[in-house]
Length: 549
Ligand code: FES
Image (cartoon, rainbow, N blue to C red; front, side):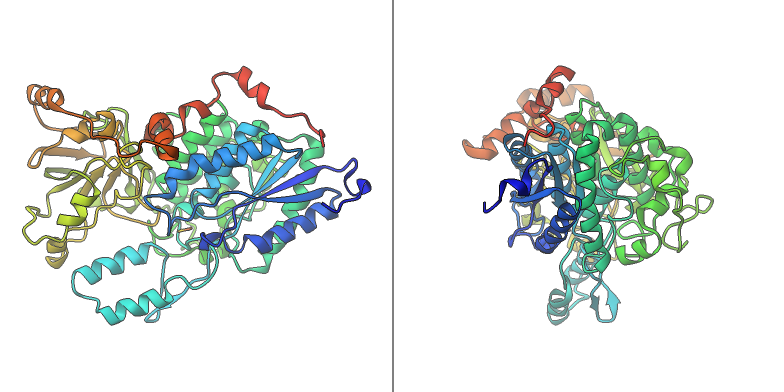
């Protein structure tokens, strides 16, 4: 390695887990950031050693980067466990890279700090700013409705993603990096710094310096990732109107510390947390405005009285100390507590016979008029069926229909893809309908919007009732009473259940096979059963020896 003994003797060895990859455009800036992190580590008297990890890019990976979140978590955890590293800087950006690294850090329990690549610059289409994902879905509907020409579509493609960085909406990437900061795993004020802003390089150097100090202080994730910290993250998610995917990831991360985070906890906190942040897809603005308005710290300051301010963070100080000077500089973007976008309930957890273990709806991005709806089901048996028929003028659908997608859950695909924001059928779009109730055992992009019920558990492939819905069945959605019910009598359902056969499993080997055999359902975070600690004793066992380098 070309190192003299004096170069490392007595110095903390700092791993830099870099999820940079040519296959992941969102993480393209992490190479440069790693150099700035190294500078910080050296300035503080540590020895930086960068290592590659697998990288998960939402835009290219099929069927879903989510299939590989647990694989990435294993890759990072085992690299930390196997090598003489005293502390680690986790470089993330695109959606799944953030929770995968935090799951790994929670299990390995070495001093760890996370740094993201930041949101990409805003580009413009025909003079209008484009929100990543959100505007793509919107213009895609316009195109299917015949209101956007092929030439316009090519213009949109040409300018859609101009620059390095993550989606510039409050999609899953920005939600997860904001939650990492809320949990106390990222330096305050850093999650929303734009990807190409010089302050991001400064944050990288500061992060490098800080991890060396954390090793000396023996400040580990086990001291930061507490039940109180997860409550703070849930409050932040709700105030942000953030991605539904965060629910799955937070449950998985908490599980790595033996912390049970039932879906009911999200619903409980949703009833008392105001929705404050006016960002796409729940609102109007983009991440550049969010950062200028004060970023996450300003949001946390607004809900200060709802937070566990004593929670320890990577700064070595408490969350309360970190946000002491924070305030909103733009009340249109980060609302005052007294003038929220909604008093509460950005997310809701639904139960009923259709989702006995729960389902999630992002109320902040749904249509108020559809919060209470009874309609007849139009069932798609899988994604291929959906693609084959959604644009069919003969599809028996109207504005009151409830679209149901089956076999799109964690085991069913496998991989729990983002197919849940079922496109509005073309014949409805042409009639001016912009939203209908949609239900699935799938997920949706954090950038998507609409009255979309997701993560139905148990899923179709696990014998869930959602797999037994027939065309024409009446489904009742009542968000106010948190109810999702299939209105079919019990005798008929018993008959259908008796006739139900699991679909043949296509994947007989390799990682997909491992995934199907061990993935937990959505309400348990979709981690692998064998990756959760079985007891506190096991957690103690995996803690490495400090300074072993
Ligand atoms: Fe990578 Fe949105 S697709 S951050």
